[in-house]
Length: 353
Image 1 (cartoon, rainbow, N blue to C red):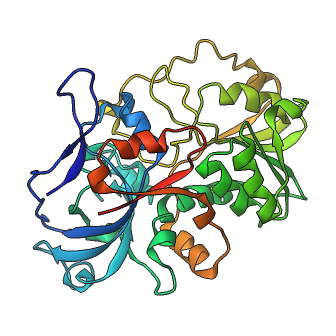
Image 2: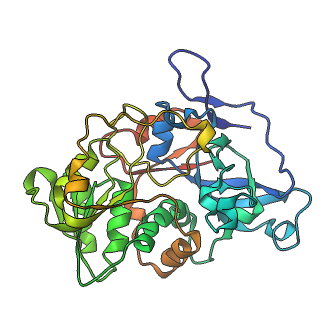
């Protein structure tokens, strides 16, 4: 089968399209999925720069059809999935560690993460995922919308983590795909929301949603925002965010990048490796964190979110995701897919098998 693979063969290291890769077989508790639509995330680009030390099939945003189920599954989580159109949570967990037992399954000590850590991803003609990770897609949500379930869930996680009092001023810093999803979700709260970014064409999308948007160069950094969401995808975004948030305000961090990287996009929604496997963290020595102490800032790290809520939001038509699609390509286009996603102005590149 065909698959877009990143490994350490060749110099420089770069993804390759393999056309003769052996199709996986679902193990106990797993299902075999044929993806019908896949989305390129900035995390995929960061993985190719060394983030997480990943090697294998890329990709974690998908909608697809279950073709087969492995052995040892109950009726509710196994064979009944065959033929269903699904999306799937990317963290594959043990279910027995202290985090899992505490209800924090996305922080499982022994997890693998689809296309990110220890598990081949979805940029292939077939891939496997635990049946317990699946969510059936409502009939009124087409593939172009359903493929946004994972990043939309990450945006909704911000809402889960915030405590909204009064009518706060919220700035979403960053005009990439995740920042624009966060802005749409937050704009439904009892809050005054704006987007601040560096790219006029992206910011113009906010006009159709009725969300104020400003170029970063036109905004005064006056420490007057109650909440700032850093969705810049840049290691320097935190510095700017600290200059925007008021004393005793809240910073929500959605940015993760490869060590030493300052990319233009935001790959923040995805899982991370177990502690023993993590690569070195980005060097933060050049960032002065003292304002967090002096101004008593509340800092929230935010990652994966609720798939069920994301599907309900898509089904209700509460967010516009199709406007974020910049290009459609085929899996057979191989590494050109990632090049297209890395172009200035690109938001979301969608793949078909």
